[in-house]
Amino acid sequence: MHSHEFAKVWSRIAKDYKLHMEQGLAPSLTEAQLTVLEVLEERRRMKPSDFIPYLATSPAAVTMLLDRMEKNRLIIRERDERDRRIVWVSISTIGRQEMQRGIQVRNEYLNQMLNRISSHNQQLLVYLLGKVGTMPREVG
Image (tube, rainbow, N blue to C red):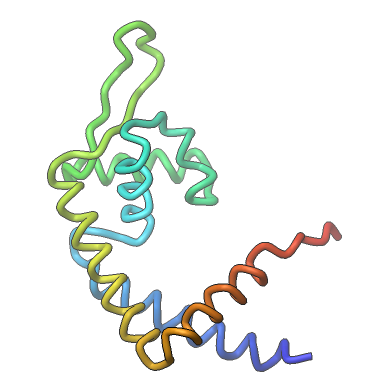
């Protein structure tokens, strides 16, 4: 088994990625906000509770995140016309611009990392990580 070596490499990559994203996205965006913007770009509009599976966090944390995003004009919140209890979240023009900047920051980092290996090995890496990432979780 190579779990110890894998853990060390994975930890280093995750730490480097997180640091790069924090620095590259600052001061107007966080990684979680980028995730929200990307999902909104794809889905057009969502209810706040719809973000929970994408962010793996609590409803209260999602609300606080959306509050900050609305304050920074990254998103727009609107009440449903037929059911005032429902709030719809959509991406703003500023949010779309910040999302594109965030994607560029991420892609530059990942391209820099992946360009160290051949195209064939990049495909193999993505394939193998996909296999590892879809392993069934043991309930313990």
